Amino acid sequence: MIKKILIGVASVVVLAVVIIYFMAQPKLEDDGSYSPSSLALNLGTVAVTDFEDIKYTKYTGERSKILVIFTEQKNLEMKNGKLFSTGNHPIEALVPMLHLKNAGFDFEIVTPTGKPVVFEMWAFPNEDENVKVIYDEYKSNFENPGKLSGFMTNSSVNDSAYAAVFVPGGHGAMIGIPEDRNVAKALNWAYNSDLFTITLCHGPGSLLSTTLDNQEFLYKGYKMAVFPDAVDEMTPMVGYLPGHMKAGVSERLKNLGATIVNTESDKTVCVDRKLITGASPLASNELGKLAAETLLKELK
Image (cartoon, rainbow, N blue to C red; front, side, top):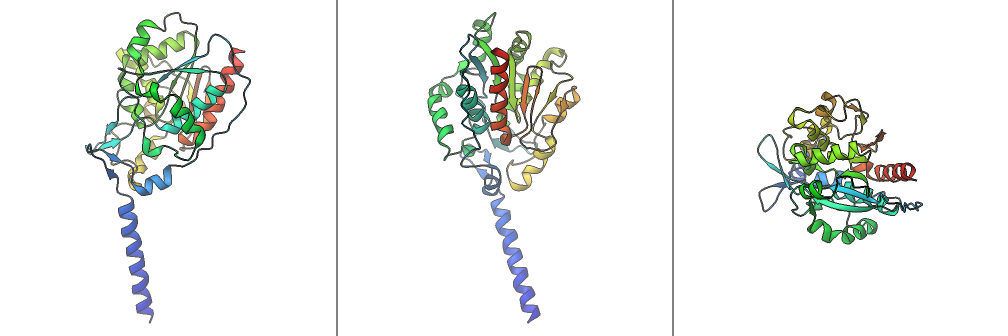
């Protein structure tokens, strides 16, 4: 009798392991890339965000624009050669934009070369009406963004209409953005013009661009919240990433002299001088609130 019970328990355990194994397999897309497994999606995405619809006293001054630098790239190559189907995380982009819009700011949407913005649509919160509304409002801008190169040539010099530069997160922010000289120009422009720079999760990878051409890291000595490399190292176990990343974000920034204030992929946000950062998708709402409140206070 005991033997039969043990065999039955063992069978259940084996079945559970097999089910979890298949649930943890990344999904192969038509272009040969991999999106997160069903297990990873269950663990790491939401249908409704924690966005708080706060009624801000809206800003009505001249510096009402925010330059938003999105990625136009979709596939991030892993160490094993597999491609991760990525882009900008929709919650990390749209929830902060909701707060900033409600605070009276508008957006200049750009990508490096003017190709359409790429979102991780598998992470889109399909039951969140607020997020859906702002996505639809700016959809034509996402599909036909400006060129960052053109912006840096034509729009930004001595321009007093801007309050901040925003670089949303998502692993796609690690494709080309850290090596883009126009991103470096935009960040230096914001820094030298006393504008705010707002970014979260993997978006702070954009800050690496300021070291191009042997320049000193612009944010040396700054405190910032960033997605931890240690968490990225673990995500292949549940099939979020189809392999390990070639390079992370947090340790590279730390090695350049940044002080990383978080150790988890949590709701941590940080403001240090004119740099506003957040740790993960979970920080999107808190980052939006912090950015809106900080800009309103600074620009009143």
